[in-house]
Length: 566
Image 1 (spheres, rainbow, N blue to C red):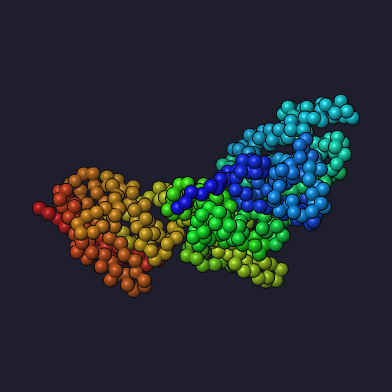
Image 2 (cartoon, rainbow, N blue to C red):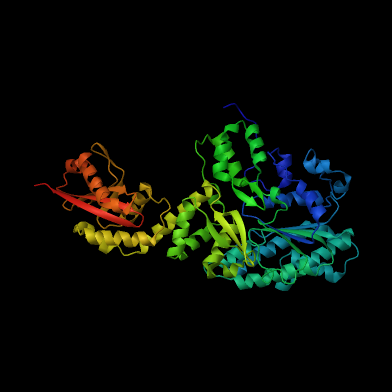
């Protein structure tokens, strides 16, 4: 592959750094025009994590803020520059307050509040020019210093947005633009913490937003971003000027994530246009309004892997950056019906679910419907179609791409491993060693009923399942797919004490329930024909048990043969 001179912006979230340091930038600047055209006093954008929200907020700040030096060079050649004087007249015109709440995600309310206080303090420091200005009272300056120096009361910080806005308008004689990024991170962390402090955090954020966004005469407009829309009753109490732009909304759909045309251009610029189909399978499929987009974080990471790392296969980059705990919650709380639904999703099927946009973190775990909603709005499911039944909206949902499918499968295996460790398997182990086939079958069927088959009818799933539950067998080491004889046996249980029996297990998967007897016998015969016991014989084991195990969905059948050497 020829040398490609493309500087990919992995983890770059500052717009100025993006442009000045020459990173590859997918132009989203027409979002500025849309904001000015469509208006809206308080605009809440909800998108999954890592979909470009922070970079867009930085872009808005650099365009609108009345900096000492113009930012025109940053936007030179970009789409917003071509829109004309009407829009360029707003450049560098307004005082801007910009806050990110993403760091307020600690174990306790006090720790998270301290992070919020620190973020507000830094913004006050950034506007320190106000302290040298005339026209402010002694009381105003004292309060300003108190908040800036992190010495204010909780009430001071609840009112800080409104107070700073008023000071900025007074000084610049222009109403203020407020940008708040990742507003719901403190709420999510508070809810999912080991010792939840959700109500305390809700009370603070509600007061913080109410004073800054509801009763603030100094406000021009505000843009807020987050992952999940929280109901008006929970946070945005009485905020009648709230314009919600969720993943259900057609407006602004192209500004978060990459369009297919943008990905095609990136691949051409990177010299690897042949990778489009692979990227589409792994990172495309999200639907914002009616706009189909790629995950931008994973797309950039993939391109970096191909160009610089020479990695031959795509990987699930989002799994290391997103909050995947909700999938574990879904799996852990799943009843039999939900487990069946998860299996269908992972097999590529769709589910029809009622979607409620006013989901509240405090209600996420109160019903399975709320969990499905949460998975949809956070990017783990996508809409295929929509119908209205009565007053309710029902969406046909599916997993958007292979990256998200991998996350489901990984979380399922982690959950199953945890469950297995907690399960008493002594009855199963005793049955194996005493050759009690009936109890062996009963225990396998019981454990299968508790798990989720994410690769139904695939031998790999059952192989992993058996390996997992046999890892804790006292005095034995479970080894899978070891070279032996004329082939590869599925599973070996090798005792540390050679006086005990060694065990060989071969696995088959039946297409129909009626085929279980035949498949279990075939598995047993394969052990003999392929001489899987040869290695054990040569090591000196005098007693070797051979099990042929056949599976059909959550059922199984076992056949046994035993060799004893004198």
